[in-house]
Image (cartoon, rainbow, N blue to C red; front, side, top):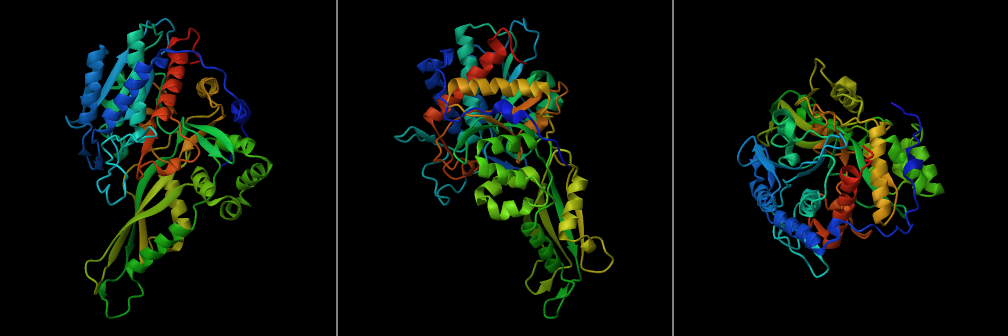
Amino acid sequence: MSAGRSHMASTYLVRADRRAPMPKATIVDDAGIEAFAVDVFKQLLRCDTTNYGGGNGSERAAVDVLQRVFTAEGIPFEVVGRTPDRPNIIARLTGNGSSGRRPVLLSAHLDVVPAVKWKEEQWQHDPFAAFEDDDGVIYGRGAIDMKHHAATSVAILVALKRSGISLHRDLIFAGVADEEDGSHYGVEFLVRQHPDLIEAEVMFTEAGGFPFYFNGALLYPVQIAEKGHVNVTITSRGTGGHSSVPHKDNAIGMLGRAASALAERRLPFHLTPQAQPTFDVLSSSGGYATSLALQALLMSTSHEFVLDRVLPSEASRMLEPFLHNLAVPTTVSGGVKSNQVPASAELKVDCRVLPGFTVDDVIDEIKGVVGNGYFDRDEAPSLHIEANECGQPALCQDPSDPRIKAVLDAIQNVINGRGPAGPIIPMMCPGGTDAKHYARHPSGMLCIGFAPLHFDESWAFSKLFHGVNERLSRQGLIWGLHVLYDLVDVLCVDSNPPL
């Protein structure tokens, strides 16, 4: 696939070192609301909402926290769920309807990935204690993924309710379950069973709104697309028997060949319309040499060389998922005794699928990398591949959609106004979020990854997601509170909203 060059880069480029104007005073400038947001954040971090997968886990404690907040503040809410231990909470501030616009939805998942062996993993503090150090850094599983967004969103609803400010459209908050294991108890359930509770014009969730430092430039990613996800199984079949004699048709040996090929070789290069705006902004932000390198990266004849020999390893690792379907070997099973050669073995492969591609496309690419001749042949050893499930399709929003441009313009203005200023960078999320499920809502809502928070350049931010010592500073949380409120103000309070 290919795409013509986008003009989005010029829209979002500003000088990263530009001094932001003094932001206007808002209702969240009140120290009490800032302290309230921090308190809710800490309360949520102290809730062990670990998602162990397979339906095992509970968001009940976090929902109870939010239920007490909304009850105390007189904010209407509903709690719904497939099971009592996997609830979702939806709160709403009703607007006067004067703009005729559908609601704005702020969504945060309340579950977190495990940190069971936190001492062995060398966490500095208990991941469910919400410990704050002398520098105002708050440690906890879910600090950036993504209880910060729940806390700032709830604080904004509370501030608006207390102030009595009139909204021209509804503002909804959804605290949802099970994002870390497919959203079956969360957004998928809500879209299927309670679509009326979450109908919206635009939804904001994770995967954007944080600083991204690229070659000396300060950028702010905003998710507008997302790769799809599917797991596939490669089964190897050979002739089993006793390990005391040679087995040239060894099923495990053949499976090892497939795993090695997928680990060492990339699937083919593709430049999709959803990825083009990212590279437009990066090329314009990183200096002449970087611009040349990125132009070469987007050429099929030089792409592999630039990834392997020109770009720094971390930059290469970050950019590669935007330009390739990924097929990553994750688990192997086969054999029961050391002296018995198994007749079959299995390799699980986690696949991340670019917008515009199908599961069958990725399977064909996997076969091409491993070797088509090894699959489904009559003689042993032979490989067979199939998808374990239908998978989750990619979020394929069109970057040229005027509604997306309107939202991105609003976010850029908010960032510039609050500071530190820097261009936003429209991005495709290589992982998975609730956005793919919200995109299936019959309302056709826009799904945007923007859950603002701040940190300085010294933080290895990408390693904190699902990582050891996940944390966020008090000031980084408060910055996100102000930026998110500024955006809500533009969309829900201003008399001439852009969307």
